[in-house]
Image (tube, rainbow, N blue to C red; front, side):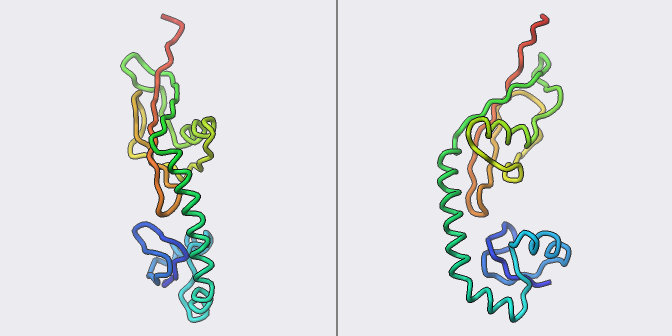
Length: 152
């Protein structure tokens, strides 16, 4: 199926491009999320008429994302978890935990915007990539600390 992209999508294309994707990807993700339109003559005309409006909206959201990225770049968030003497966690730190820690720090970040490069199962410091916009990312540091148990 051919679609017209309404925003930049990584590894697919930029706004305004007509790309060929699988039917399921278009029907289940791109079209319901309003990230694309079906590529037919009517849609092409509508897109060209609304192109300046879509570009303005995209520029506005990108500007907001860049402002948030300025605040989040280099930020350190600490999560305290129970761990063994060797530093192995009893469980793991998930995207949900990171989202809640950022929320407590005053930054509302959706779970879908947090990208982890590895599974966090030990104490230490980890880089966390935050995809705030299709073209804007920030990198924060996650510090996982160990709880000192009372029973010694």
